[in-house]
Image 1 (cartoon, rainbow, N blue to C red):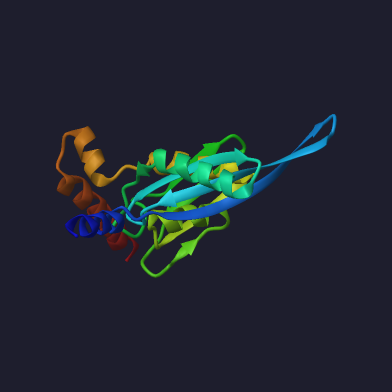
Image 2: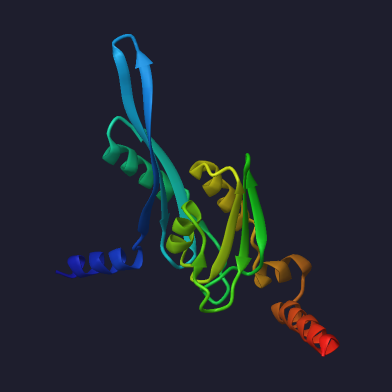
Amino acid sequence: MTQAVDRRKTEKKDELVEKLVHINRVAKTVKGGRNMSFAAIVVVGDQKGRVGYGTGKATEVPDAISKATNEAKKNMVRIPLREGRTLHHDIAGRFGAGKVYLRTAPAGTGVIAGGPLRAIFEVLGVQDVVAKSLGSNNPYNMIKATFNALEAINSPRMVAAKRGKKVGDIVSRRENTSNAKIVEEA
């Protein structure tokens, strides 16, 4: 009886959200005709700052999706979020011809992003962000460019550790410079 209760607790704690981003039907021409196969790309996250993506190919759609999901779970990374709802700073990412720009947003903005970017932010747990993709609209390149940008995000704690300072020094400096700008404008 206690084992069943323990199992339920671990399932709730490790609950992951899966989103299917894209399915591509691929045809290979052979002597007897065409061989059809399917390629799938899936994004997996816990809506608390962990996210991963994976791709899978198979002759049937469900098999491709399950392969992609397994790969996504293996390739999960932790992304630091500000207040658990947005990014710490604006950033750009690039992969091939795909470029993405990710911007922080005030509370209540929502997820302003299209296609694969929206799926990533929903499973990541970001509630307020503005994202724009330029160049390639290939979902594979867009997702890789987004992960390129997300992995380059630094939290104030990470910056403080690199510089050998306290988090308060870095955060207060950012607030003081924004207050100075307001005083100068007035």
